[in-house]
Image 1 (cartoon, rainbow, N blue to C red):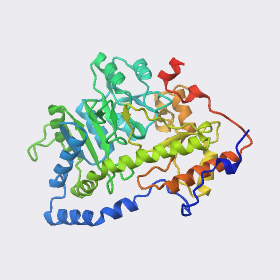
Image 2 (cartoon, rainbow, N blue to C red):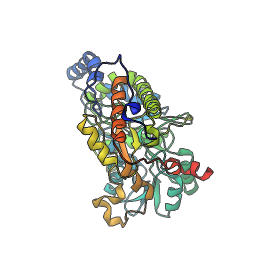
Image 3 (cartoon, helix red, strand yellow):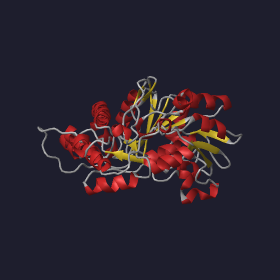
Image 4 (cartoon, rainbow, N blue to C red):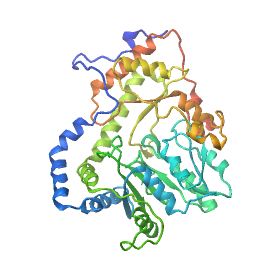
Length: 412
């Protein structure tokens, strides 16, 4: 028997009324740090060291320690971090780079900007991360690098990907834009491949006041090459050894991030608590039988940059419209796989070539999970989802294997 709307709802008689929930709200986080931020920015102004100054060096040292690597190299954005990493690995025309189709555009655009060809792999349906079996199928003599994305704050299957890469002697470059602090079997994101790429875009777990990025590596020669490439290949001034780019992290962004860096683990813990609360609430209301909930393997550290559910049966867009009417923020990451984007049509992919990617683009919906999200706000989100499904005349249940990882599916 289908639960009634009242049975579906979570109630807290002692909770204050909540009117709407934004997808992301940084105002509380920044307000608590505003005095320190203002002091730091004023100090940069007084110093006159606006590009690659002491604030940048401090942030590089902090990120290197946090990511458990020897070197961290600041740059202008997460997109530039990807470009610089590929340049440092000598990716160029006629080379191929294997990467997921289910990711933000920058992962692939960095490849094409160097004249190389992106080769799109499918994803694991449970984690949304690149499926190693799909990667293995796409290795060719022209493959120059493997570029996994630690999507939504959870690391890809790095043991399997590193094994594939080692078998053909090519590097693994980690797109850790959404995953600073995530761990794979005790190893921090950005420390598991040859180079890691981090974004400080404001929506990230460690977000700046604009664009900013960082590269991480344990290789001394790679770190030196990255520093050279980010500054026009120039060393010393006006003597150019290679053709680099202009991608230097400015001191204002570094100062802003240095204030937030000591709070990063607390932000992560709050996100983890929010994710756990969602799972508890969705299970208590029976919504876990209506939507696919994101798993969090015990052996890994998921940092929850996004909390992404699956909405089956073609109802995702309808649900999103309903939530918008109730002033509940949500987002679709991502509505198209990159292989299905107009600018990549020349590669010859068609819908159906990457079935798990296609299915994800039809079903995924990100819900609010920012650190300052309150229990009352989460209950409102869950109540509104309950109300949406309670009005449905259909009684769909999730089909288990479709929400399992490929490994789990094989076991069953």
